[in-house]
Length: 128
Image (cartoon, rainbow, N blue to C red; front, side):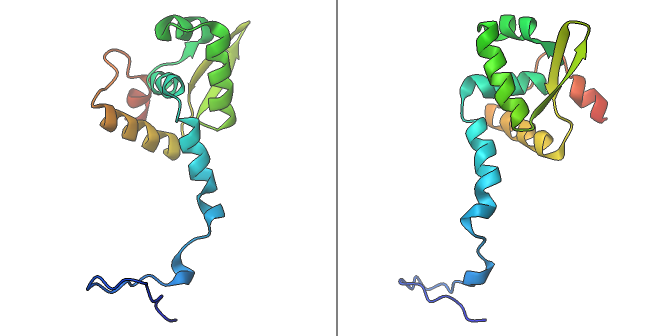
């Protein structure tokens, strides 16, 4: 296989072969995830649900948003596979999905924020 000849020679050889570069379509699922978390309110809700299981009413109170607005964000997070829900009677509770992908995103968010949840650490206890 031949190396791709780059237009500029900066004194370093590029050892990337064209066939080693994935097609754009390969990056689309990751791109969709980042778009999903591209909204500050949605990322905040996701971060909270990584620590606690909450109903819409309590989540709305914590983030100071209307229940319909929170429900809209929850629907998007759920469709993206980042959260899951369970029903108990008439109440629906939401929490972060227990996937490696979610764990990595949560970890990245906390590192970027430089902040951990001050109180509940539900998912962290379960992981231990």
